[in-house]
Amino acid sequence: AQSVTQLDSQVPVFEEAPVELRCNYSSSVSVYLFWYVQYPNQGLQLLLKYLSGSTLVESINGFEAEFNKSQTSFHLRKPSVHISDTAEYFCAVTTGFQKLVFGTGTRLLVSP
Amino acid sequence: DAGITQSPRYKITETGRQVTLMCHQTWSHSYMFWYRQDLGHGLRLIYYSAAADITDKGEVPDGYVVSRSKTENFPLTLESATRSQTSVYFCASRGLAGGSNEQFFGPGTRLTVL
Image (cartoon, rainbow over all chains, first blue to last red; front, side):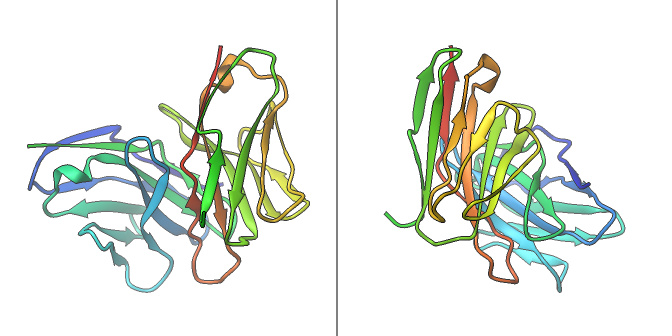
């Protein structure tokens, strides 16, 4: 069975500073990895995903994540955050086309 | 409306009552899912469905019942609500197309059981 660990429940950061949200997974087989974002009082939206190919994946709003198989990690980074990035971020893993397993989430708090 | 919708968005009920949460998607996606979101637990899968009339248990199915008579609808019923079922419930759907496992989420239903 797969599992996902997001060690940081909350990450406070100042606007325009860089940020890294950590995600580690556990699986005995190949995985597909996702980052979802949840803005206050909304559902989850896909931010980016790794299925195969290049290990560095990017989103349209400046986030990127790198799949590291040896470290079983898929950390999310952004070089300069905005106030509007304040949200909860969930890492998720699946080995196939069915169930996603989510981490417990990291709340990113961006202050001016 | 196109996409995935949930109703009601907010519900308050009492212990022991039956409650049904509705989920409707307009994409004709094969897969549909129900999750609950609780602080400290992230999202946990309750039930999922691979197609009409095919459902299966997820991680936390106890106390819940689902049905899928039509592809576009996937209602979740709490047969006898308990306080521990106070949560935010999310429905999601996913197509069969290869190359993407993206699930699309509804806006959620906030359920309070008194």
